[in-house]
Length: 599
Image 1: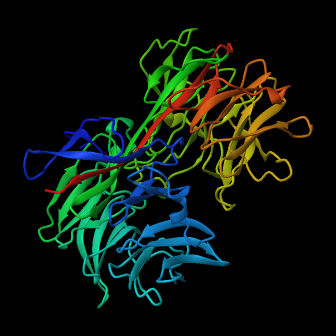
Image 2: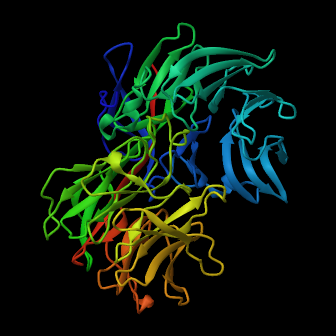
Image 3: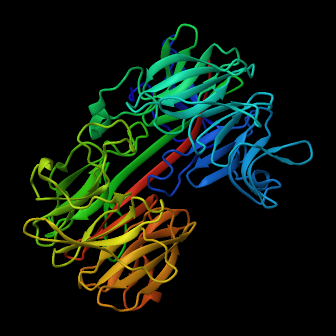
């Protein structure tokens, strides 16, 4: 499915590339254009970001997690003025069929979805938390994602609610404006395409068993209403185990569905994820992901990065420096974290790789890189362990906690250390191997706000002795990541302030006052670690539009120094036990708007 007949070729905006895909009706190659491309300096956060093209093909909305931007496709520049319009603040936007923008946000104290009228903005009755699509003439709307669930379609003032056994992930209107198509994802990870006739409120199943995504998607319907285009990982239901295998290489492709015969055929199959299809005139547009993570090492004094492991992320050194552990699996949106496991390679004193990767944590659902205890008795890691192969990230049956395991022991012997976690971070050990620090949301608490926690364990049995939440400095709401000082009495913690602003704090475990070392800009979870002498802290921050590695003196915080100037983003630094090397994750990212002419 992912091999196809595509081949990668770099291109600037509007430059026709040598990339091609196979036509399913013949063996001809159809050229693909890369219309626009950018490289977000983020880790996983932009995996789902997509492009929505204007009806006249002159511009595109891009975004998702961090809001949207309007891009002029001829110049490649962001059009901030048109995106904002007469609004005070805009959080999301979509195009109407005539090219006008519908925006969610705030204007003159009113908050909601606004459409552009003849002379002013009109506040819609669509809920602020909904994902709407207006009918071709703009008189009707279909939306999902609002509190309470379900799909709403009809007049904006009084839409009809349709409930399904699953979650709606995408909607599209037929050209006549009388039919709505919707993708509904079920608990088994398979999706259903349904057709809703708005006038008489009837719902008909078009096709089931579709291997679509478990999050937002899109449907493109041809002008004659004969075909629909959707993103799928394959043309049949997958083996549930494959969702959890790092080597399965499941990626999204674009498929065409004949709405009369129910025949399904691939029209775009290239390496990487191809998703969010749209039709604009004779063109099929979609978003293409090229995401790669490699483990690199950098001299602790700074310099060029050298690759140690391809296709790995989140490094961690063993206590004696002879191994580097990392996470394998990548960020395919078809699996989204289900396929993450942990492995390790042997390295020498010069951080040269000596072995092939060896699995050290395997199992169903997400497993992050383990941290070796300084005494070598335990590895600790974040896992979403499930007993069975669940179908998607947030499916019932998964956990989200810290686990312990003896090095070399099978995963079946793991010990679940905590039972309250929610989006748990990577753990780090105290020098005496008796405590762990990690950050986590708290089930039942506010989502999006992590707090630092310290778990005390019995180093012989791995039994949890005590668990406490570290007090945060006044005015600090939460933490991103934390690392234990090798001197034992301090913890370095990264605070997310607002937007791209972050701060580095030192928390004392001996009753001393918290100390804010510095403030910096970062676009993701950059990571933090100490040098073995406890005198410097290494962290990742933005340098221009790339994340790079920096070092700051514990005693002289005004002496922060940039260590790298890599072509890609470097994050998640980990200093080797001998203090010579920094292992880090190199993030190579490309988000492309692609198109081809349908034949």
